[in-house]
Amino acid sequence: MLVPHALNASHHVAGTYAGQPDNLGWWDNMVGPGKPLDTRRFFVIGVNNLGGCHGSSGPITTNPATGKPWGGDFPVVTVEDWVAAQARLADRLGIERFAAVMGGSLGAMQALQWTLSFPERVRHALVIAATPTLTAQNIAFNEVARQAIVTDPDFHDGHYYERGVLPRRGLRLARMIGHITYLSDDAMMEKFGRVLRRGRPGYDFDIDFEVESYLRYQGDKFAGYFDANTYLRITKALDYFDPAADFGGDLSAALARARANFLVISFTSDWRFAPSRSREIVRALLDNRRVVSYLELDAPHGHDAFLMEDARYMAAVRAYFENIAP
Image: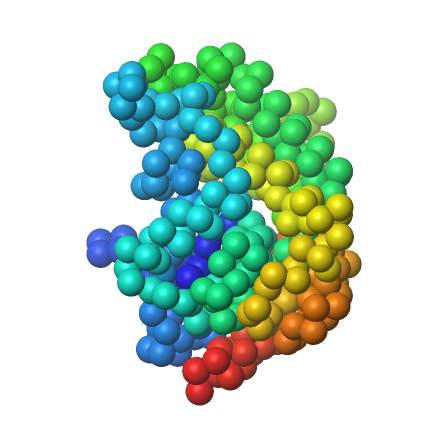
């Protein structure tokens, strides 16, 4: 089993490291002994994408030509590049074919691309909270986030490492912008409402509302561990993903290469990657007479629903894996 990660995740899919009991993997509710992706029956491989900041080669690693960090000179990589690198890893491990490739969001794009780049090397693809391409609105959100980073005075064209600074302000804003799009309006209202932290308006520009406090916390936390150059490159990979680009925009023609069976899951409150985009994938697969199961869940959590503990969602994934390996 291969589990590619979404935007800000890593190879740490599940479980904890020794001495770090609170550092759970990003999909710990999904992967592990007795969980929907049961590690008593499946060997799960987590990967770091090229250009990332959790161990793979990326902007923070040393450019052998200069002896300095790559920084802004690190190339923009694509979903296709990541999948090609994962295939080379599989070669190195002696894996001829995966039982399944499973991902959510950007990870789902990689799962879909696996079925196109290496159709004979994957039996099943679980494509969750996905889209075949980003809409103009999605690209716009990504561009605003990137502009927050590149206009930070500490960015220095991506070569901030050698100056001993970090574009924390820009990365903080980028995360705040992105985080708003991952949640639904209902989820934010239920979680925060219009609660005032001080009990009354402050009539200033300090934190008034609970949602403001939450966004600032998420931004500060993210800026403390993620790399700004990596964020720029990952969002560009999202923007560029378009399997149908070489087929005149015809997604059915693009997916004709696929040979895997599919489980596609979407969530009604996901306005960033709406269920209608998942249905485009399903229709294109059915046009090619592929075996595909589709589940559209009425879940309130927005795009982040693929990470949440929803009994119906977990049961569907568990049942699918039961059919792969009873």
